[in-house]
Length: 497
Image 1 (cartoon, rainbow, N blue to C red):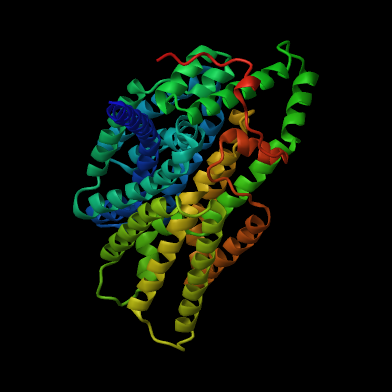
Image 2 (image 1 turned 120 degrees about the vertical axis):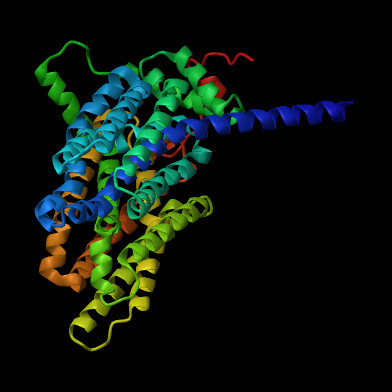
């Protein structure tokens, strides 16, 4: 009889665990959808620019200058929203900020679908800049704040993989169908995002930061459950917010006090240390060249496989497929290895392939060796595998974990603005780099730049795997993690069965 009762209790416990895991997946898929949309937007110019030129029977239909601005404007138009969205998240919460982004995506893709000129497309991309501005401020926060430490790393890597899945799907649709069909895909994904918005509760972290501890506990338990591990995390969350509010800045506004407070914030180690490390990781990712190669895939593949019988579009889709597959493989691998070790080892491999491609292109230029398109594609595939398993899926994972809990809005704004400026500038100037330095020089530039930031990360980056956000914050302060006991809890609402 006791064995039957024990078995029944075990089944109930397993069901509850699966139920809360599915809820975390459901909410995280909302964050993934914004990345998928960003991938669609980044991949679209690769195929719609050639189509528009072919339809007009003239390259003047989309000039080289305009072609370089189309992907860059998508990033630059997200800059204002890197400031606006953290403010929205602070005052209206994560849920409604996500709903606003989802609705703007729907408007953007409706306009894209009905576009008849390049100017219409540019306007749709400017609106889509809201989504680009949300990729760290809203999307990452949703995943980090709604997911348990056990699953958070996997969910964050899935998000990064979804970005390139969007690029692959956009390229595939544009290769085999008219470019406007990309807009239909974007509309469907935007509708799904709105569906998630209506289902999800408000973030327990945001509710706790507003001292709404009862609601925070309800939200936390709805998403993460009531097991010992989840209850311990809830204790830490509420205790941390209680300590933060006990030392909060005065409500009466005085410019001198206001400036002194924020000067004290930005000069504290727990604020500038994670921001500096986040910037190094972002530089590693951007200068690895993976986004640039995705945006200018046709041009780059054409240059290194000149004379090949294989169509550049076919080669592009093969590389996109390899990219997506390897990123999902990486999502599994990231559960087996520490973040730091995986990032460093895969980055080293990617740098090796970049330098090898640079040497290959240089020797061809000197007529020392003959072109071998299969060798070129093999090196490109090897480069894609290593960069996708490492920097691509780990960058936002680690950065999302490093963002300080206190003043998250200010920190996420600084991180996002730096990424937007960096990525937009590198995407914009990359055609000039290939033109001025040649293919071999461009590969050398990306390889050397990535090496510099990898050395810095090797020296300073700590391990964040399987740590709670509170533990990581303590690590940035240079403190050791202390387990919170039930006796230490100042206030945790009782869990009602």
